[in-house]
Image (cartoon, rainbow, N blue to C red; front, side, top):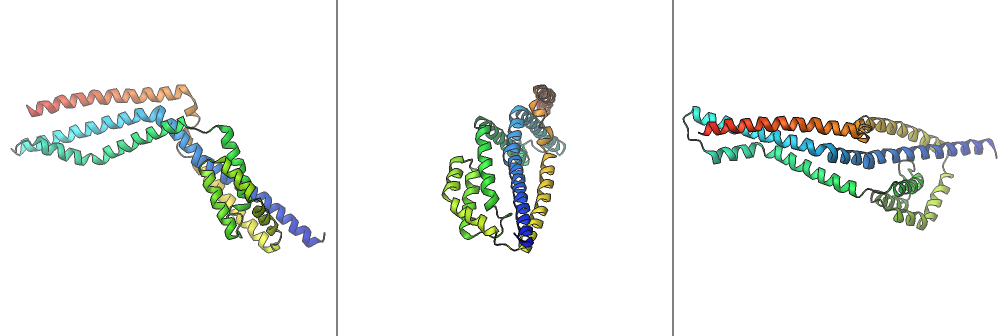
Length: 265
């Protein structure tokens, strides 16, 4: 093997190592974004969020009562007839967006409960990610810029199976298209040293971006309370704090309702 071949072989080895690192990081980010984040959000929603929703509902009801009282006082101060139907309609219109938010949060909580009931086993998820990484190393367009049309189609099928959690389909794709994937590996050897070097620099830059993306997502909600969500005492404390707030709001709401009735007498 001459010096030029040795250099090319070393570059291809470096490229292969970088591809593996990049695919691992893509997988890590995907796990955080599409598995970790939804799961933590679901735990938060079902363990704490449902109590936060009751607080939000109480706050909206209080806002509605205050608005009614304001409209009634305006009518009294201007010697107008108190039109409760009109007032109710005005309040409903002004609070429509807030109640839409309540409905969305309630739907999110129900979706979270359903998600937690149908979590995949860790073993199945690990196998899914392992096969995906193997296929992605040779078919992901970020690390394989010279894919044929057929290889691009295979990659589309791989992504589809991965995001649907279909391990068996990924295995089938790996088996059925093994020749096409092997052909892709052989074509790497036809690249010039300059093409390989440029490819290496591109992947290095992409790896840096992925590291930054992973760091950013880990510093955002719900990952900022990931450890706390594993602590029953912390969860109970948050629920207790929220329930205490709700009790105070409901007491205030009752006071306002009494005041509202007095206005109407």
